[in-house]
Length: 446
Image (cartoon, rainbow, N blue to C red; front, side, top):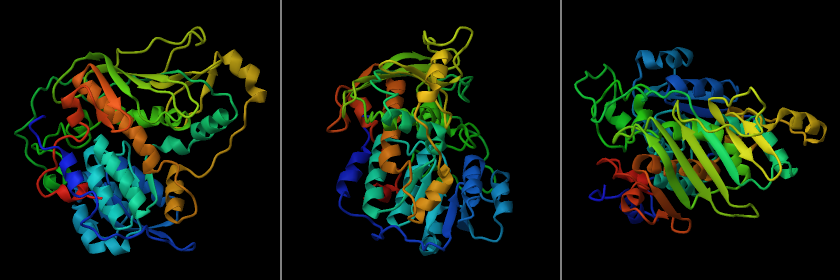
């Protein structure tokens, strides 16, 4: 890692310029539909396309997927017939950029960044699946681009428009959630990599017909095609995914991070790691984030547990006979303890008797547009998105720091002013990660 040229050099060299023309975010008339291109058309990407289209406020104008024409994209191709199809997002933007108002980006973690940067530089509004990007520095650049190009953006932590969002906001403003000094979060469902014993990249497989592997790799390091990478398995590898943190962190800790104003931690500690391997995520880990006092909030310790056998101890307030779910959080307030799961599921005060006693006095909360409608209305200038990059990006950066601790172990000290890790040079280099592949440097310019 210390021998590599870091991405920071590309960032500094181009801090004041971009290879793309500066176009402010596109403005859509009140009675006009949003011309949207769907990038990533299988699995999660296909689901995003379906939900955005269901708003009935969009006009699908293009499909883009590195495996276009295969079984992987058949569902989207059948649903959105008669519109242009592309394998390379660059070719799509070159040909149709002026016709596109917004894009959805439902592709592997490592490819979020270049697609988003190209879109934003052309004034195109962006819906990007979580986590926002693969590295801390990529997210930093995406936040800067959102501000510079004045586009409306949304990260795909869908629960951030659900009941838990509105409840947490109302309960925090109403003084029900206060003085939080400790949060326990956990993701104890099985992961794809748990049975793996790999210490080397898997090779020797035949490339599926119709697959554009070079575009799939994007800015990330080059490794051969493998079924252990595509489809879906990329999340398991440090070079391409963000593990359980990237997958579930934005669904479990999003509202606590937002409304407790957690920001970034000044210390990250790998308390426990099991099944450690050099290329893929541990079989289990306990990572502690220490957040300093901020904006009237006390210091807060957040512990994350992942792995099927690495479960936290249940809180004393949990009713007898009940167990913690596989995925969720316990929030320890000044005088109340709250238990929640993930996505938009609302919190419960525990024990349940306390919840019942307080029911009549708890602040009421309503709903609003769902996450996809919120994005489309944001593109139209009719709402502000709830999970824009400058908010969801910092949340994602917390998890990027957690990934570094999972990978290296030990205690990492993080300087909140310089946004650097100060006590470990290898860890600090992972803030950027390895340099982009040749030919992909342009995306690191804002």
